[in-house]
Image (cartoon, rainbow, N blue to C red; front, side, top):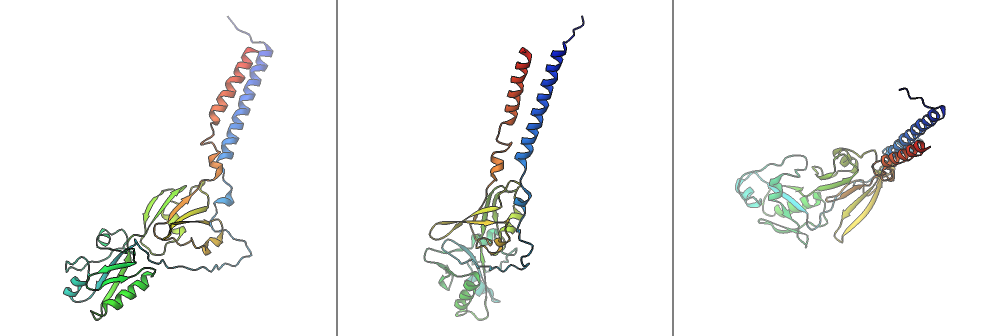
Length: 274
């Protein structure tokens, strides 16, 4: 038996197909629009064409505070003197590894924690106040005190607890131990897999102080970020990369497939009963 559809029914089916195609195009447009981030929002360190190429900025030195852990090594040619002035007290010379030596278990094990009064207690020398000093200033100060007991000794001071935490829209969020006493925010982005396309370049940094925590912003879209007090990171900084609002409202959270299926089904019922 051959079934013949009326011209009117064929037109209804054709109209229904057109509606579905239109819905598919709308869905694709919404998907594309929700996934797009303007090019200007993902460019780093932008500046006007008529601006000078040189941007002056300061590179602040980190000042030691209570709770910091230092690895201090007194280097001398005499083996007995070395054993007396170093905390391992083994009489065996140790070597540091890496640019800053951070993350070396031996440095952490034999490190000196700065107490609430800003002091570290060293063998022979006793208490040494290093709070609010840079690493260079602390090294010089300890060398002067050691010089009262030894001639020609050299002091090596490393900051052990230099770590930074990065969370949010980056390739590899996590806690990073830094082997450099002067790391900047660009360096951190490179080791953490860079920001994703949805990562807001206006970054939030939580910085610990003796009084609590401070919140700062640094906009990596702007070349003036190089002048920011937050461009260079400090130990225990928390770097948070917030997602753009486009992603929150985008296809990843909006149930567009469900809406499309529901509308299609309703149109099918309307067409069928007509």
